Length: 474
Ligand SMILES: [Fe+2]
Image 1 (cartoon, helix red, strand yellow):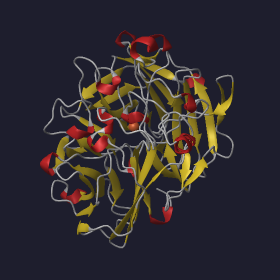
Image 2: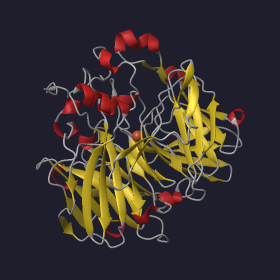
Image 3: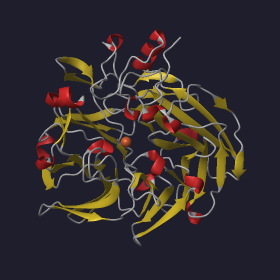
Image 4: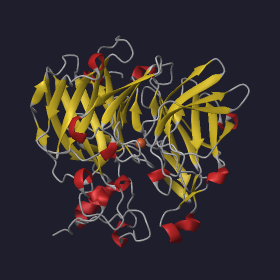
């Protein structure tokens, strides 16, 4: 018998609690009509511990479970599978959650020693003919795009290794690479509390690792996401500083040091580490950026920031809100504008406009909870920001239901930017159940065009993406 799950950890309660079955639903009921243009698969990753995790479990540290919705000819099927990581298999062997959480009491189980902590739980992306399950600090796992069977660690043909910790080890990469819609390149980065603190990666359209080098940073920072335009990769270093000296007090090797400010490194994508140029900004934190483009000598980026520390802790904590950064590449200087007062996070765009001038953002947002701290329960809407008109419209969910990260699917290959459908896994609070909603962007505030009904809930998750039928391109 495995241990029972804790009943007082908020990340194991309600719709954070894991779903412990792997299932196949070959033909889910649909309210309304699925658009004929919606042909392909929607994937979403998230934390789903298979066994009771150690003390102080946090949502960020559960084992990755991928949800897949396959759409074809007006039908939708669903399946969910854990990613068979090394740590998942170790836990199956011991029938125990041997990996702990964060905090002073999160002492690791000795059986975890020697196993990679890669939980592969954060994102899932299609690139170069492969479906890749991503994590914060390690290589991707490749997963079958139809069956979700894990094919193993994807090490880019043996190229994804680096001298770290005194030996040759798997390299680091976060779960937020950007895919250039024109070149098909995958632009990624890794960060670490131990040197090297920052690493840049580029993968070609054919899936080969083309560039991978270390970058200087003013201090080791917890970064999570970065910014990519057609010509630049931008690395925001926030004052969430890795410091093992504070571990004994806080249980986290992380120190919020606002006096250090934010430092933003701009690297030409075809440059070398020596070409990085730095911009200074006030202390803030950002989990998720949205997009960036260059106009003349200005690099313009939209992102969600909070004025305080990550994880929304501490007095005066604020929810994330949409901001715009304008970096003057000629004269220097970074200017920030507030684009909205309402809390919002997990924003996506029409992927055909990644790194380029663009108009539309779709994001989780909150109309009714202006002071919410960024937790999924408070996101009562999906927002559409039109950057051209400056307007925001909300697709309000009924009954305080909770939105998941939206995913935008163009109506056709040559449809106008933002013309298509927005998918989101929503949690029906009163029914303790989930649906996948399909919202037509031409009737964004109206009823969803289709609601794919799940027979049970899908736990709150992180990031997902769309693979067009046949898997060609993006
Ligand atoms: Fe993320």
